[in-house]
Length: 330
Image 1 (spheres, helix red, strand yellow):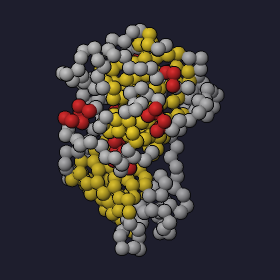
Image 2: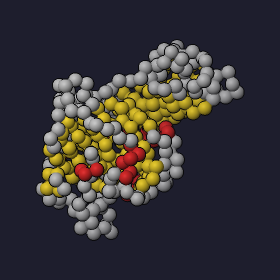
Image 3: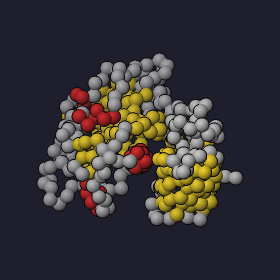
Image 4: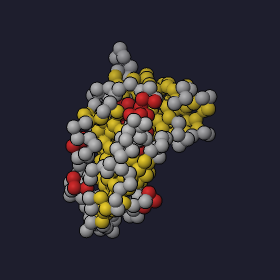
């Protein structure tokens, strides 16, 4: 369905009013916006169909001094967002890795470099695939929400985002790993969705349900163990740059990972913890990684260990290099 709407990027940003059946629209008419920390260019398109309206948004990295003014700069984000008529359902679901062959800017220039995963975002569950393109770390994403009642609308979001190569070079980052660790991929995706804004249409059927803990859920350890866990998670106390707060490590994902929340007087943060090894009643206690993104644009990441199902100790650093640590609340 979407292959026909992924029109090629124009060589100049001054697109014609009609581009492959799409009309150029101003930014304030696009339901999808992206807050970038670099100067760049963008283009927004729209097409009306019988049962839906399709929006395309493209963001371009700054043009280098060596580029010709008639040459398009690096296309580092392209979104395709569709809103349907009430009661209309999309006929097929999509796999996020399929997008590498759907977008012109990715064909023959990209390769997967990590495992697929699903991330719970403020817009519902989004399927993601990390990949590389021309030495830049990227992620493709697909989210689909079908109406639950005839009066609700359906929505679909898909696209990809790549760290602009100029930004990556300016930050001194090395080339992406061949196999991006899951915790790094989840952090990369969380940072992207923290900058993405979708103005959902009224009565959209967004499925934000979170998987509840199974009866045999285990705490911060791999499947196959029998140690009972708290039903909803572990309450924690935090210390971030000497500011004390509270939070929770939840067991709301498959065994071995979950979401986490941190709160103090300066920020509200949400993120993910993930078990990486070890087990109770063994030579190596359970350990893993965690990260959070906050409403003041700060973020932190680190590691944890767990001596028992209700005991956890975590430590890490924020984006300013300040210490962040937590432990279970007594």
